[in-house]
Image (tube, rainbow, N blue to C red):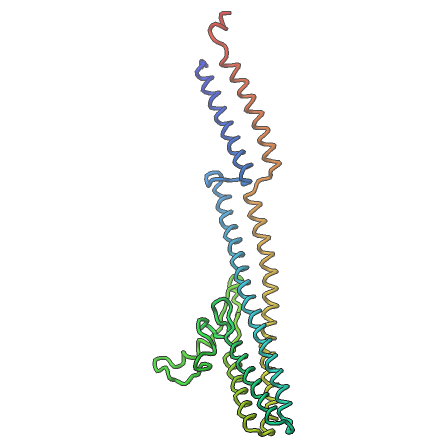
Length: 302
C-alpha cells in the first residue's frame, strides 16, 4: 500500500489528539482528585460510588438523629433532677411540719413554699426541646400541664374518649440505625399527676393543722422520689446505649468513607507519574510529526 503524505499527516493528528485526550483525562483527575469525573469514564466505579455515598449519607443522618436523642434524654434527665430537688425539699418541709411545736406562722411559711414547689414541678412537666413538649408523649405540641391541669380520661370527648390519654402515654421513637428505634421520651403523665395530687394533699393537710396527717407525707414524698429516681435510671440506661450507638456509627462512618475513597480517589503519585510519562510520549510524537511534515518539494530537490 502506498503511504501518502496526507496519510502521515492524518496519523500524526490522530495520535496527537489521542495523546491530548489522555493528558486531559489525567489533568481532570489531578484537579478533582477523583478517578472518574463522568459516568462514561467507568460506569462500574460510578455505581459503586453511589452506593458508598448513600451509606455515608445514611450514617450522617443517624448521627443527626442521635444528636436529637441526646437532646431529649439530657433535657428529661435535667428536668427530673429538678423535680427530685423539689421533692427533697418537700420531704424536709414535711419533717419540719410534722413537729407539733410549730407556730401558725411557721405552717403558713411551709404552706407557701409547698405551693411554690408544686408550681415548679408543674412547670417542669412542660419542659420543651425546641418547640416540643418532651413529657407529652406523641402530643408534643400540647403541654402536659394545661389550663385545666393534667389530662384526665373523664370521657368528655364522646367521639374518641380514649384518645385523650393515648397520645400522652405514647412513646416517641427515633431511628438511630437500620431498623433500630430508640425511645427518647419519658412517660411522665402518671408520675407528674401523682406528684401534683400529693402536693394538693399536703396543702390540705397543712391547712388542717393536723400533725398526724402531715406525718404520712414524709413517706409519700420519699416514694415519689423513688419513682423519679427510677425514671432517671431508665434515662441513664438509654444514654449508655446511645453512647454505644455513637461509637458504632463513628466506626461505620470511617469504614464507608474508606471504601468510598478507595473506589473513587486517585493515588496522586501514580497519576503524576503517568502524566509525566504521557507528556514525554506527546513530545516525542510532536518531534516525529515535525520531521515527517517538514520536508517540502524544495527540501527534496535541494
